Image 1 (cartoon, rainbow, N blue to C red):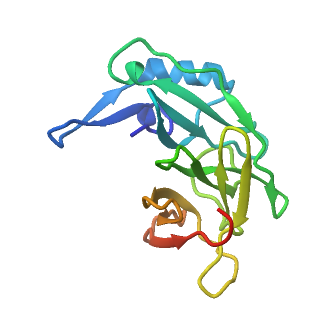
Image 2 (image 1 turned 30 degrees about the horizontal axis):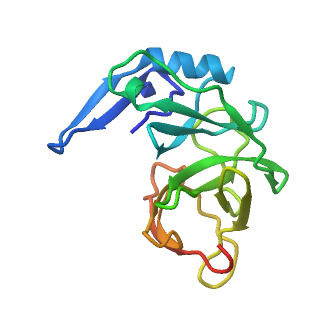
Length: 197
């Protein structure tokens, strides 16, 4: 697990060993390289294993640059020299006039990457106002499709998912929300993708 990198305390990794124990590993040098490549303070919201690398999803916000993905080789995570690919910047569009940024992502068995994006106007990962409905998107190397996230009754959802787990079908799974309010609990939601996904 990667810290967001937004502050020095968030520049570390959590590595789960084969014995189930979790090791917290400082990674300031790796985060410094990521910041240099991005040209801004990292705000990593998701990570997904892609072959022999971990793809990181940087959340861009209004006035602070575009969202981006970078690949970190597994060797750099396992104690090797810090390394990461050049960033690939993504224009995720706007919703309610506000730029969208990555908030969650996962890769399916087919290699397809699904991500969630939500509006934000703050240049840090700290509390924001309630968001309009975040879009749900599916991406491959060559194409991308998206849809708004809807509640069971068909209305637009106002939750902000910041965790995503796919079932084997890649059409269902779980979302974990972040209410951006320390007095409110997170929610675990079941989702289903309908239509030509």
